[in-house]
Length: 153
Image 1 (cartoon, rainbow, N blue to C red):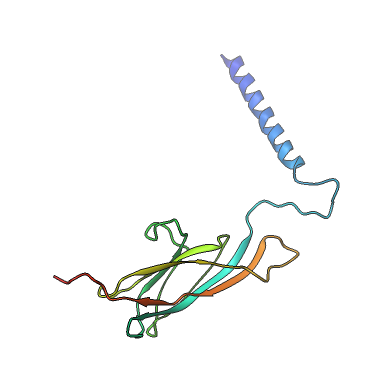
Image 2: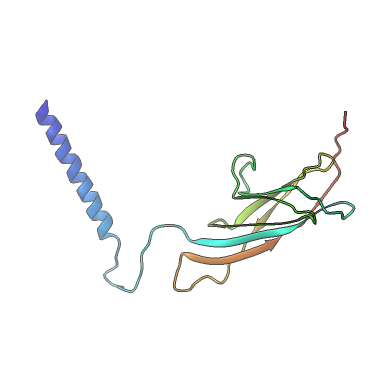
């Protein structure tokens, strides 16, 4: 029984060594020594800002603005969550790989309906010497919230 244990331990260690060697040997290109190979995802800095008003163009303060992925429920995952100020203004930012975001606005006032929209960010100004730097992107998303159709009981 001990012999089988030792044999499997030796085989396991040889497999680990082989995988490490293969991973190390795949990190370079003999034909082009100037090419830098890295692991990871390109990142870009983004900013989504705007104003939240009601149908009478009055600012909506204390509304929650969430930035998430288009196909994700905003109660489960968010990149950023901010509140509007007294003037109804907000600004959310982050550093991610995504180009498409869903922006959700949830008013504190139950007399107003929540709203959401999907935006596509275009990154620019990245470092040409660093392929991981997508640059930055900024977009303005304004919300005009409608009155709720729900009758208060």
